[in-house]
Image 1 (cartoon, one colour):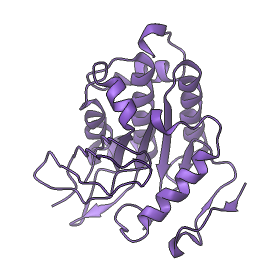
Image 2 (cartoon, one colour):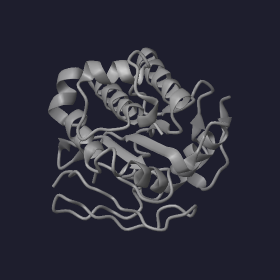
Image 3 (spheres, helix red, strand yellow):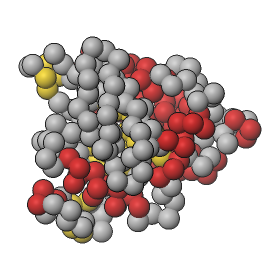
Image 4 (cartoon, one colour):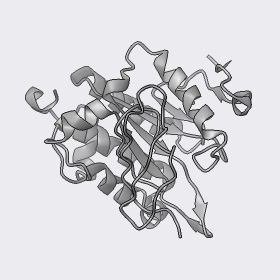
Length: 243
């Protein structure tokens, strides 16, 4: 059947994470428990000091976050160093001008949401990593999950956005609820990825999301050049639109 573009509405997850139900807008009910990394309402688009993180289960005993990992944790090895640095630069610009916290995560092969037994432990590990940063604020977080996968012999859409409840409510009259789904449809489309490459598609999705958060108002993905300029702080925005 393949993965379809879904909207997950996660209720009352609090800090217990994902004892949640999912509703899918494309003829399929997504598996409960795929909401990512932030507690509360989640809008999503589907159905990396080298130290051992706290082991929440046997599956984490070999999961390490590389010492250079920060806001971008690319355990799937999808990004070049230059691509990762560009996303980190965009996140830094976002955090200087807004209260929003954007993060990107790609799990190791075979350790993504399709691994239902291990996935909750992987998520806990990454949350633990980000929580070590003084800048982390789960109430204002948006996470881009990049998890390449196959379904019925076809490459599925690898992108998935998750937003915290407070952030969803704050943005509801500024950024349309389906804006992030449109980003997933555009940048995660297998044909688009085949044309530009997986790493570039991920970067474009991340920059577009960051740009919309900086701009403070979006009803659809921004043109790539505008998104890059906004995301990297090379284009000014009105302060009133970023709070």
